[in-house]
Length: 239
Image (cartoon, rainbow, N blue to C red; front, side, top):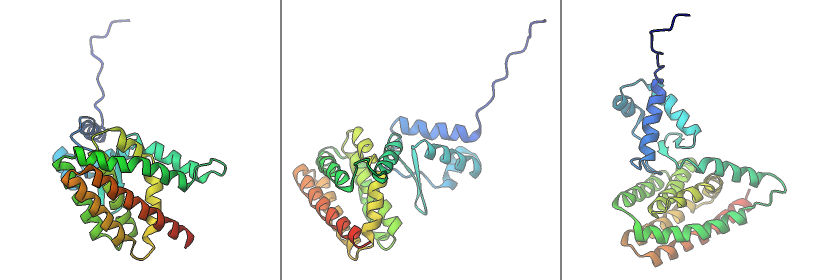
């Protein structure tokens, strides 16, 4: 057989794959942080020079990998890559009879984790972190009448606080409880006064983080979790 004189033709990656690779690369390099919102779809199309179809396909693939989270009516957000599978596992463990995981266990773990996160964030936060926390609080205020929108904004505040801790394991550990805690917030929203009470506590935590007072941040988070546990208990009893 005559030896071929032609080089093998390399197949070019699809546009959607190229967009996905570019976005995931920005996340890997720390230029897009967990809790950060991506530009609107139209802007992404303009920036990449591709169609909406390519952008949507890229976003869907990254969402499936746990890198992005698409919120109904709320845009697309960066999510820690390892949080989604762990969160799904926890949710399954809480549903399976005999698995032994209860809400009490989740709340106990949350106390151990988030009080220290608040203290670390107060000591290490950046101006970028503070801006993201302010944005989450404003979204909670603006969407206090919407169970889903308000719950998502509440989760984003805590996710952003975990990022502000400066320890990359904190968003991963908190992310493992994300779906369970989101469900808890949806339940709690049904009780009158919950959004207003939660907002007051979030503002107190933010104030301590902004001034760099770690002890005050821990106290504010502890008070917030005390109130949240009471509210969730009442909401579950009212079902």
